[in-house]
Image (cartoon, rainbow, N blue to C red):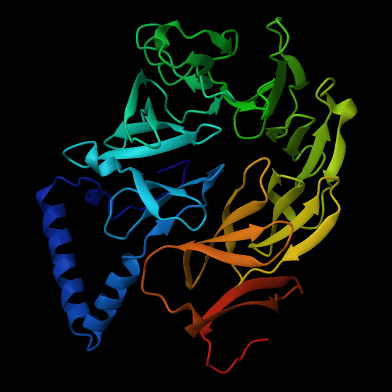
Length: 432
C-alpha cells in the first residue's frame, strides 16, 4: 500500500540480479530472443548493416591556434577519441595524444585539452577507469613530450593560458584532508600556475570565500589584461566577476550577481560579451564596457528573437550565431554591431554541435550531424556563408540516398505538431 493505494509490483523479484531465479529467467529470455531473431530470413543482413553503422566514429570541430588545428577523432572500433594536430588547413593530421597508450588496460580517457595561444603547448587532463578525476599535464606540440608539470584534482578543469605561454589560470579541487571528509568534490577554486613551479604553491586567485557548491570557470581577454570568472550556482544562475590584471589591486568587480539567469562569458580586448537569458527566455547576446561592466552599460548585439540563441562566437570582425528552431539548427553571420549579413545554408535539416574559431581569425568551424549524416565538420571562410567540408567521421553511410523532412499535422485542438520524417529519397512523398 502507498498512501492508501494498492500498488502491484509482480516483477519486484527481478531486482535481485544475483538470484539464481533471476539468472535463469534472463538466460531463458535471451534464448527466446535469439531464436526469434535467427528465424528472420534477413537477420544476417540486418546484423551486418548494424555492424557497419555502429562502426561510424566521430570527429570534433578544431580549436585553431595560428597555423595549428587541434581536433579529436575516433573510429568506430576505438574506445576513446584521439587528439590530432594539423599544421595548416590542408596539412596531414598527426597524433598528438592517444589515451589508449597511457594505460595497459586502455581505460585512460582524455577529458579536456587547452592549446596555448601560439599552439606550441597543450594543457590536458587524463583520468583512469571513467573516474573523470583528471590529472593536468602539459605537452609540447612539436616533440610530443610532456613537461614536468603535473597537477592532480583537476576534474572538468577550466583553463586559460597567459598570452606568452608562461603559465595559465586554472581550476582544481582540494587535496584530500584539507576539507571535511566527503567534500573533496566541492570547493572548486581558481589558481594561477607558472610552468616549472610546484603546483602546491600556486596562488589562489578566486573562490576562497565562496560557498563550497560554487562552480567557477575562467575567461581571459586575448591581451591577457581582463580576467573574468563565471560562477555557476546550480543550473539556473550564473554570477560574473571581472578583474583588471594590469592593476595591482586584487579586486574583482561584480558584473552580475544574485540574479536567476544564466550567462556565457567571452571577454575581448575592448569589450565583454555576455550571452544570457536574463529578460530573454530565448537568450540574447549583449556587450558590456570593460571599465563599467554592470547592466547599466549592456547593449544588445543579438537581441532575443523568435528562435533560441544556442551559441554565439566572436571571430575576427564577425559574430557567428547558432539558433534553434523546430528542434533543428540555423546558422547566421553578423557584423560586430549585430547587423545580420548572411544566413548559412546547412546541407540538410540537422543539428550544429560545436562552433569554434580563433578570436582574431577569418574562419569558423561547425560540427554537424543529422539523421542520415555522420558527424561532420564544415568550415566557413568568413564572412562568406558557403560551407566547405573539413572532416567527416569514417563510416559507411550514403547520405544521398535519404532525405529528412519537417512536417506538421494539426492536433484535435488545432495546435500544430511537428515531426521529422526520414525516408529514401526516391520514395514518393505522401506528406507535405
